[in-house]
Image 1 (cartoon, helix red, strand yellow):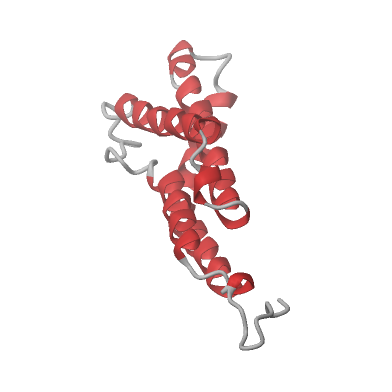
Image 2 (cartoon, rainbow, N blue to C red; image 1 turned 90 degrees about the horizontal axis):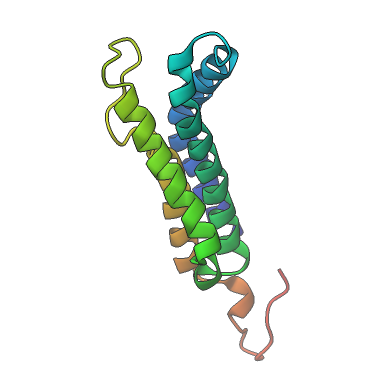
Length: 141
């Protein structure tokens, strides 16, 4: 069962790779031009909010693996994820008028949502440490 959880994490990493690379490129470009060109200042908070939300979604996944879904559904974890999703949507809306780097609405939200879905699925997998053997003992993991 631990292997399935690892595979879920790897799938979430793979699914979130393309949006993360593009957001990293945008973040480097925005941060590098922050002092040069005033229009870049308006996109920087959205990019920062996205990265906060993405980090919180990884924390959500980790809490699902270690503590369970009920603990992961804490408002202290879900609020930053919502802020990150809103930041991703805001960045996509700001880039709609730029034909070179325009992304469909929902593209950047794939990254945090993939980690959240993987965390929820991981909590639904059976926990081998709770399954008792015929003797009534728990197996050594």
